[in-house]
Image (cartoon, rainbow, N blue to C red; front, top):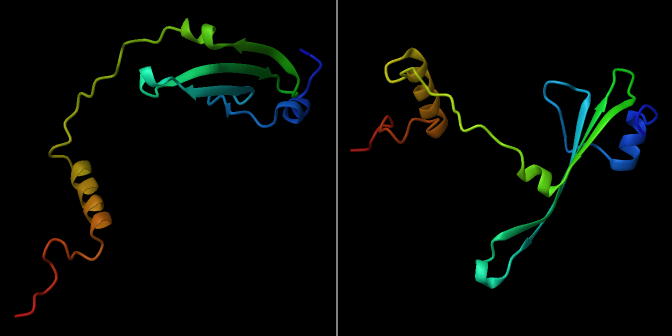
Length: 122
């Protein structure tokens, strides 16, 4: 119940949240997702049966202030942007690239034996 339920009641009833908001620590997100393998004609592709999301907003005193529930049909209506961030820098000759390459080499071959640095018996 809004303005009556506190954080402890929520944890007791629903358990810990699936995730917590990164920017706002007072948003708890509970996710329920059930899938099943479809018939042979669809080559075993997973089919979503239930996809529910419950978002609870808690005030700074720990009291429930707002709740939002989204089901499978609601989630289909969400539009995601098609925009993306382009990389506009070149790492080919940078100090950072050289450092990362050195670290990667040491991780892959900590004793230096793969590059022929070990002495050979003649």
